[in-house]
Length: 386
Image (cartoon, rainbow, N blue to C red; front, side, top):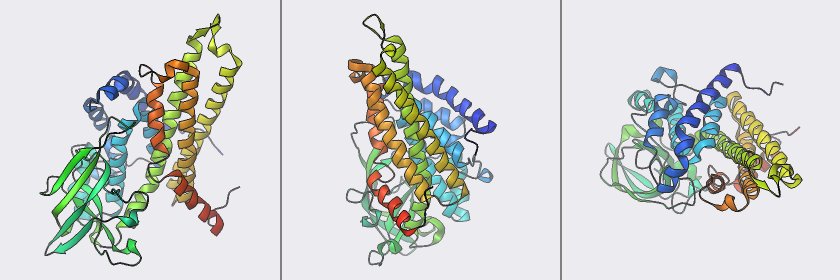
């Protein structure tokens, strides 16, 4: 077994790390606190081709392997997790379109999405339906050569910039089981009746907007039905969420790494009782535990990414997302402890890392729900541990 990155992966990580060190870390705290949108960072990511991560090369994308994909989110989240969210929803939507779109849909959207000229997100969650996507209420009724869409979506990343926005709808509300009546429509955000009603205030995950969208008799051409087939929307969405869990595991690792970096630097600089606090055994124990957990998190994230490369990996990505997200939260708390009172100050990075880490156990399926997914696979014998 080889637990090292390939030379190509190492070079790619070096490129990403340089970008983060120069363009993100120096401005992240100030821009996050002021609510400033990271326009320049977005441009830099577009110039690097990162908006085309999951788009095939024939459409101008990078078509990154899953481990390279994980590296992007780890490194950017080490600088500012909220900015990684801009790429996250976009890349999942592009993956879904590349996998399931008609040839006409791919030709129409993917080249511009790859360059960042167009950006997108994913319209799944609703006010009354988050993890239980089969409970959505947004409907799409066929009227001639258009679908008429009515409903609302919640917590939509990139909502003010997404065009088109893939939206999960019920084309057959009476279907049993419910998922067979669900489809995805590629909705033009400039359509009449498409309204971004508000930005949702958040504890963390700033830098990108999370919005509520209302769809009031929005008319969507039939040719914008993803893949041209009704009733497979749930399957299309779930196929992209595997990459989403790799994304979340890698983001969590980036947060945990930065929390450790900040704690280590502070332990070497802060003095108390005539010596640096890193010389106290209690601090050393915390640093050792943090470093161990961060490295375990990284290996778990890369392992799940490699599993995706080899085929379907619901269990592996679920395990990684659970473990890495909980390491991120604990690392941010431990880093705050090392910092003492300064860890509670908005003048230091640690409090932002703590606020951002909390989302990691919620997004892309809550950890408790993912535990049930993993457990059911174990009980069926689909997955063997050991």
